[in-house]
Image (cartoon, rainbow, N blue to C red):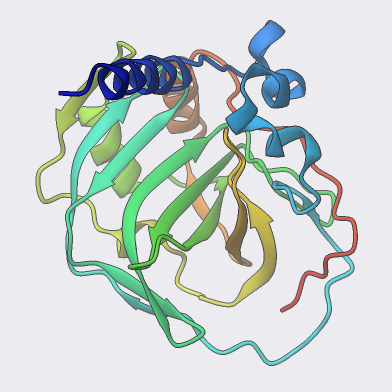
Length: 243
């Protein structure tokens, strides 16, 4: 192999590894206010104009078409990432919006909820992350309010690893449909990922109706996460939220 090419390849590998190793968190010097300075790849966290989450208010009424959920596969595993709780879904589930099909990839749990609705906060928000064949992303967001015990969250708690970096198989207990409210009306806006690299161009589809969880379930989930994992609200700027 050409010596110069080999050196370039080694340098590229080193730089790639360095970017992959960039650590971020929800507090301290690596917290949200500093994400944009931790890595050039994270710069959008500081400079972006279409960032998430936001306070959903002053909504423009339109005639949004219903979302089409074809959730036929199950969550394969549950992971305690150290920064939150993550469900990884098997292939086969999708959601259609704008005549585009987005495959369900993951469900992420944030406590407290990241979005506000007319200034109201929720103790938890579940974000169902989807991607199409070209890598475009859409997130269906479900708020969780205190109330009755949730049988699906109970199944999740039964398998939830208590240690960061651990994952467990979830079996055939949870589908994407289990995490959606019965009413499927929603708000929509253009935003970003709420974690680095804060990529923009994400379709946000925020369910108007919340699901419920008992105070004990919320307490147990929060204990495992060991604190808050929500990004602060971002400026809405020139964007509109529609319903």
